[in-house]
Image (cartoon, rainbow, N blue to C red; front, side, top):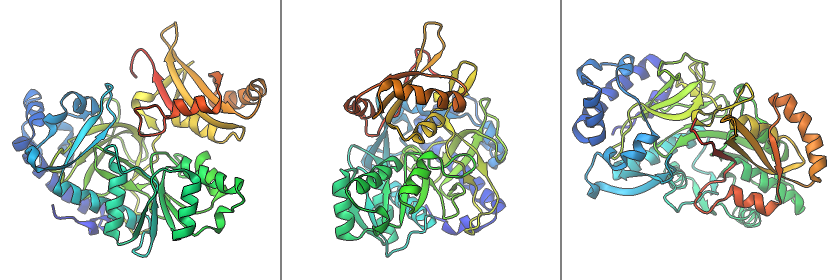
Length: 434
């Protein structure tokens, strides 16, 4: 694949022409190499000759993670001898989905992250402390590692270790940047203050943040982002990505959404009927990968609810920008006449100082309706916490979830179950999926 980094600075019509041509090439590749898409095209009686531009995308069926779960290796377009790396992502049916990458896919992944670091004001002289795991088939850590290498910056692979070790390494090796989950950055700041260190005196100047949202729909810092900024006012760059798409949307310094990489991925925002939404309207992020050899995806519905914006950015890029994730389509909660997404609840709880940790659980009650239970760890007596928490939740959510209080160790076990590679803050125990 010939990468086109300059396309980010070209007008949207130019980007759309490029993507239309790339789409036609991709369809030919899928028809010739993908058992899954060959069957899908036949089942839907798709005539690929009718697809001439992005405007014809609606003539093609969409896919989802459930399809990847049920037909995992049917997505593979190359002989297994050409696979050089297997990564994995969580599945919808209890077992992981494997993603196979060729040598060219690995080069594409490195290019993607290189462009992401450039977007986030990265320079070759930076020293990045990488606080992510590189094992257990986790793509993100590997991708960031390769991107930093391609940027020409220095790397310190600490992984998601204890705050004491992280701070010792920062001081010894003078890292000026880090890649981490936002809630862990907050823990680092809190640990430093508890041990007599002012985080603001550290050499760290910026953080590339993954896995959790830092901003609301208005692009202002949410409760978690504001707490980090208040404790440690470094520059924060949000990212949005998934293992399946093998591509990232990364904020620039303007902090107005993740920039679309037009030479790597086609972006659609669709409503529940599969119809395209206009700029600024929320719908499901649907992607088509460009330049992927091993497991390309066509109109893949991610389940994430976002909006896009297409005004040129002050950084000079003309690419579309993706909003923070409002929530996941399958995680939408219908609770006492109110529609909620877990991130909205997270944002409220993150802004309450007497709540140390939490897990949000949704389950089906005896009336077969959604019920919410908040599992909470607090330094306050349970009665006092509930007395203070109840009016906050009623004012912000307009409904009152059930409350259950736990010791720190119990919450820790809930947040880090044995099979999980990520911190869990939402548990969906509904009998019928949403």
